[in-house]
Length: 88
Image (cartoon, rainbow, N blue to C red):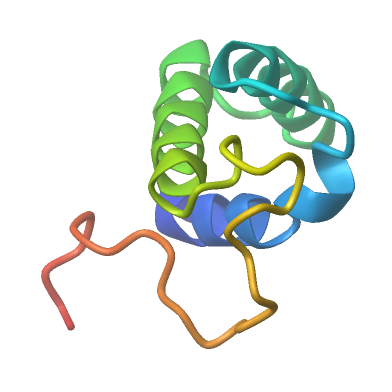
């Protein structure tokens, strides 16, 4: 599985995995632990890249501004990691 896919999947399930999370710092800790458990084959540098991108996406979407799930409207068609891959 490539990093872009993991970033998209992790961002798309933020409402579930970050339920009750109120700030990006807390989200980073939760996401690092979750991804390390789910994908033990990943290097720390890759885990941090994923977490950095997911946190940036959530911040841009307003996730932390209005509580958990703040900016997400359930539109699963969005490419959450725009800017990572110039194919589109």
